[in-house]
Image 1: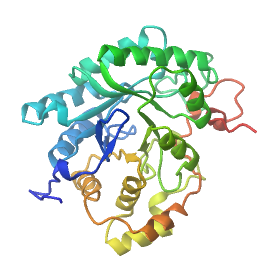
Image 2 (image 1 turned 45 degrees about the horizontal axis):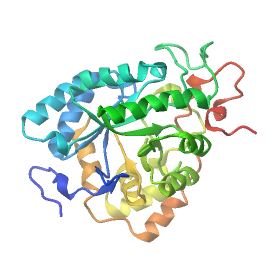
Image 3 (image 1 turned 120 degrees about the vertical axis):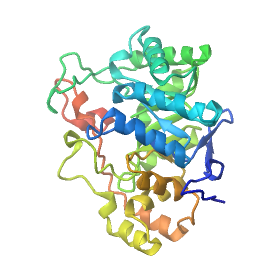
Length: 336
C-alpha cells in the first residue's frame, strides 16, 4: 500500500523486478538525460527531488555530462539517511571508450564523478565505436565510423566482464541492441547481460526484441517511455508518432483522470519493462512514481494499448552512421 507523507511514495511499496542472480531492482527508474534542454544542475536537482518522493533507481551515463553533480546529490541523500544499498544506480560507457583499457578508465571516471564505490549496472551505451562530435550537424558522418563489428564489441564486452569480476560493477548490460546482435553476444560471452536498455513506448513496443530479452532472462529497461516529446530536435522527423496524442491513450487517460503520459508509464510497468522517465518537475516525477502503486490498468485497457503499436522508432541513431550507409535502418539490422 502507498503511504502519503506530503506526497511521498513509500519506496517499499513500489513494485520490483528480479535480475538474474536474484537481485531486486525497482520497476520504475528516473532518467537523467536532459535532452539538450535542461542543464546539469537542473537534472541534479530533479534527482534530489525524485529521491525525496521515493525514487531509488537512477539511470545515468557519462555522455550526459552531469554525473559529477548527480554524484554530489547521491552523497547528500546518503548522508541524510538513505543507505547506498537502497539505491540502484546505472551508468554507461560511451562510444569513444570501447578500446582496450578504455572501458576500465571510463568506469573509473563515472565512479569518481558519481562518488560511488560500485555501480549496480553498467551498460555499453551503443554497440558501435562511432562518435558524433558535440555541435556537429545531424548529417555529419565521421570518417572513422564503421558498421557493427562483432569482434570489436566482444573486446568491449570482455572488459565489461572484468569490471564485474573486480567488483567495480555488480551487473553488466547492453543498450540499443537488436535480436541479431544479442544472439551473437549470448553465443560468445562469459557473463550474460542482466538487462537491455531499449526504446519502448506504446507506439514502439518492439515485441520481438522484448520477447527475446524476457525469454533469455534479460530485463528490458525502456527509455522514451512516453515518446520523449522533449527529445532533441535532431532526433525528430515528420513521420514520428506522438504517443500522448494517440486517441486510445487519451481515452484511457480520461477514464482514469490522469495525464496520457502517466498511462504510458502504467502500461510499461504492467507489461514488464522498467520505464525510466525523466522530468525536472516535481509534480510530473511524483505522478510517474505514484501511478505504479495505484489502481492498475485493466486487461482490456492493456490490450487496447497493445494495438497502438506503430513501429515508430524515435531515437534512430542516424548521427552514428558511416560513409556508404543507406540510412538509419542500417544501424538496426533492417537492411533490405
